[in-house]
Image 1 (cartoon, rainbow, N blue to C red):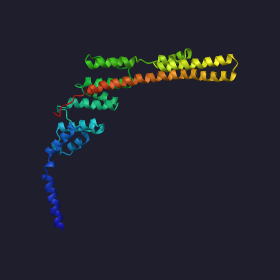
Image 2: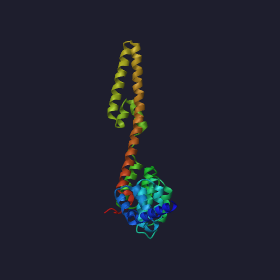
Image 3: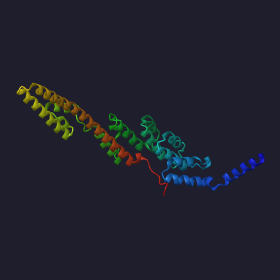
Image 4: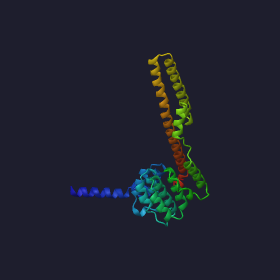
Amino acid sequence: MKSFFISLLLIISIYSQSNPLKQPQNIKLFADYLFCEQDYLRAAEEYISLKDTYLSDTIIYKIAKCYSIIGEFDKSLNYFFNIPASSVFYDNVKREIGKIYFLNEDEISLNKMMVEQENSFNNLLKLKIALKLSKNQTDDIKNLLTYDDEDFIILRKFYSQRKNPAYKSETVAGILSAIIPGSGKIYTEEYSDGITAFILTGIFSYLAYNNLKHEHNFRGYLFTGIAAGFYFGNIYGSVASAQIFNAKVDFSFLRSLSEFLIKRNYFVKEYEFCN
């Protein structure tokens, strides 16, 4: 019985070694297929299953790229850092690492890389500027926008928008509505709400005045309370409306900045591995 099991294990071992699906070239082909099908997690796992002797710079780059795409940045960085300076991918690897630092909002590491990587300095600088813009840290950006390529021209426009945003003043909105009910909402471009507030406050104010004038005191005081509620509510609502308007300005800015970076692929070069 013992000899039977030994023989069985030997057969299995021989079969596994001769199994064409376990051959490195076939594992690589399958991993390449998964990569091009955008099944990045399984592709990375298949690439990693190759022996070290088969892990070329291209495969290591692909593994790192897979993990970067699916958001496993720590694993991605480990593989990117294993690509040597002699590799044809090296300059782009630094851009990929810079992209990860940007997505992680790691400005310290991004600054350190800018000092070390002269060849990728401009692209890393663009990411640094974009990161500061996203955090609304505009004080020291202007001196960084000294280059004249298309990306820097667009970044200067983003800087101008961030430096002078089209905000609405909460104080002005409140004062306007205190003077003319609803005008603060109109100032913040909530036109229908502003008109509604003006009409309702006016109607109940008139009803209060008319009833008090004819000594219908209960109804007069009732409508006075309702009118006061609409009046002070429209002031508070106008202030809140200005806050919401400003939040929309910020959201729109960040969305536009994100769309720009995605369109530029975070200044990273993409290789055509799937042709």
